[in-house]
Each structure stands twice: as C-alpha cells, then as structure tokens.
Image: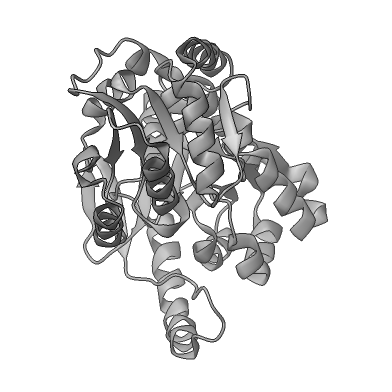
Length: 366
C-alpha cells in the first residue's frame, strides 16, 4: 500500500506532528510506502521518506477577513492541483489527512483524486467556525476517524450520514519509554506542563492558578514554545512568580520522559483539545493529571480515577484541584498508578497504528 500522508504542519513541534512520525514509522515497518504532503516552499526528505512541500494557506478563520478570503479563493485551485499531482506522482493508493479543520478544503480536493481517510485531530471551535468546509470533507471521505468520542459526535451532528463510515481511534503512547526513565533532577518539587504556547493551551490560566497556590517551595516547569511566549513571561513577572516558573522551551523527545518522571503532578489547562498526548505521556509516566474537562480530555483522563478534571478558564478550580493532590500525595500516587495501567490497556501506539492500517485498507477496498 502506498500512503500519502496529508499533514500541512509536518516538521513542526506538536501533537499532530509527533503522531505523524509515529504512524510513518509503523506504516513503513509494516512494508508500506509513505509520502508526506506538507506546507512550505522546498521539498525535502525526512530520513528516506519524501516530504513534498507546496505553498498554500489555511481557510481564514473569520468570514469578515475579506482580503484573506480572496487570497485563499484565488490561490486554492493551483494549490490543490499541485497537491493532487504530488499524490499521483507518488502513485499513492490512499490519502490519510492529519490536519486541523482550516485545511479541510484541501482534504476535500484530494478526495476527488484518491480515497480519503479523514482523521479529526482537534477540538474547539473548528467545526462551528467552518461548518460548510468540514461538511464537504466529511461527505467526500471514504472513512472518517475521530481521536475522541466528542469529535465523533460533532462530526455526526454536522453530517448525520457519516455515521457508518466513522470510527474512534485514540492517540497513543509508548508506555515503556516513559515508565522506565530516571526522574529529572530538578532542585525542588515541580508541576509540569508540556504544550505549544498558544491561546488554546490555557497556560495563562495555569499561571494565574499557580500564583494562587501559595506554596513557595513548589516550582512550575513549562516545556514548549509558541506565539504567546513573550506575553506569558510578562504575565509571570507581573504575578511575582518569576523565580519559580521556568520556561525551558522545546525539548528533544528523548528528554521528555525524565521531565514527566520528575514531576509531582502534570497539568493540562487547555481551552480545547483533541486527545492530548501530554495527558497520555503523563499517565504512562505514572503521574496524576490535573486537566480541563474539554473535548477529548475525559477520554484519556477519568475524573477521580486517573486524575482530576475541572472546568476550562477557571484558575480557582484549577488551583483547588492541584492543592488537593499536593495535600494528599498518597491519592496522587494511586491516580498515577491507575493511569499507567489504563495506558497499557487502551492507548498504545502499536494498537493505534494497526487500527489506522485497517481503516486505510477499508477505504481502498470501498
């Protein structure tokens, strides 16, 4: 099987990009060929996997951005022709789209050329913002995969007749990689969050919550980078927690397990999510998760069993949940152990990749 993986952001740092790399390795290990269709100017090779880059723009997020709408409309035909040509030149049998909803028109265009498996990766306002584009992509796809049950429900609400072609395949993790790491030797106890520094990840809410805790011997370690870094550092300084909040930037994948294992708790304060890899990685590391009850988070973190979930954008509730586990380390350890067990039972990459391959075969056969 020859698989064209449509992942516009491939090569950046994030959950979708991590997932793309895992799927590519698994598909190739199973004897399949992969070509990546990404956004950019110059095609490259990642290892020995061709990465075909073409310039194209996201669907504008707001209809009132008239200039952006016109730019998208005028450039879309050439962009989709280039993507179709790349897929056909690679002699692909099927397209697997790993992309946020603002790239839905390109998935629809590719589906006119090859069988399409549309993987719904992100929660939040994407469905509501671009309903016509998403409905068209859902209609054209041979198979649709949602990483979490709320995303599957949103797709079925948007296009009810997608239900027979729709399945839920969660994201995954390699449990052994995280369970066996030596803890990072931070000089004090610390909370950990791993995220792109952008609005949807809610790091600003976490900073407010951390300032309310009043635990001077506790640090917060923030792993990741993004467009809000400068604003978040300024917020940290205004809150008077400069010495205890550490923005360490993006880390190599090999360095992450130690950070998880050294953490007292892992916090996921997102405003919206698909099914966050950080929650699965924390659970695999045996760490309790304090997260927000948004989108796919409850699919990963069972409230009161493997972590604690609170409403989004509520620093008081977030601080209260963190404080409760800090004051009851035995409970936190129990939640962490249960999380490690759940990951091995339900969220391994081996199982996830096998299920994706099955869906890709169904799409070709269909």
